[in-house]
Image (cartoon, rainbow, N blue to C red; front, side):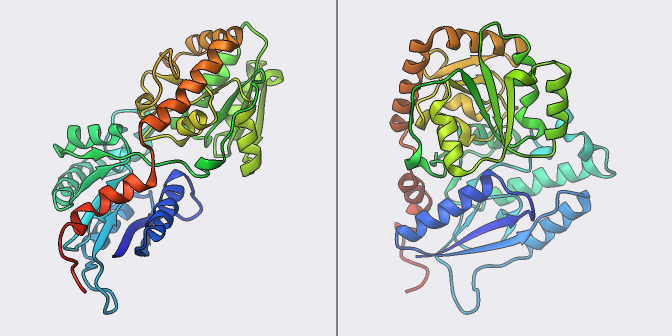
Length: 356
């Protein structure tokens, strides 16, 4: 089949979405499909730019492109699903979160202060709901996303899990006395919880924070203020080999974001056979972390995080078993690109192709 991936591009901002899109494009190609990616730049601010992006995508008709007719268009991000095409599939990374689940939190304060934000929110939810219903199949990357889609738009969907980048390269080594904390340094990842927890731990253990982002200066200053810098190391953005090694030799992995969409960190830890410490409001990780079996789920409070770090450090055999259970659970959940491709293309392959 000829398949178009409809995506947005956020110049100079790269994260999990870019990895997912590259992985999907590669997997479709390996399955014998001809794949083209169609992207338009997206600007988060001011909100007038969000309105403009909506209008651009709503006016985009991909039924015929330069004399070629795509059998399937896969829409991944807001507002790509506004486009026109007779065979439009949805595999949703997430809605535009500042106007959905983050609206009533401090994470959306900058958006809400802009004139017309409330009206734009109503318009986004209304238009999203209309265009979601045009898509078949309607899939998401995680149960957390499907739950939001049902809650805010009244739309049913099915989650389909995909593997993280380099899934076949993760490995396990004997644990050393450190907690690994790999993720971008941004507000919703809540590194502050871990830094404050390190001021509460009672056993001899360190933490390694890996990643870059706009909060690095603030987080390093907090570590100095709390006098935990001797037990906390910021390594910045690591190479692939360094990242694999840091996972492999860690005692456990901390990943306590606020209502994460999916979270490669959780899956990477499972592939490295490491238990995951996460929080009761962390969203996507809770689909994989089974408390006491593959990791530990605690309230998002530093003292609770410190308590379970000390527990794992004092019970190394139990930490190893949780890590092994995590790898078993990963395989039981059938996390694979083959499943993703099958689910996305099934509706079209059951019917005669749109062109011969």
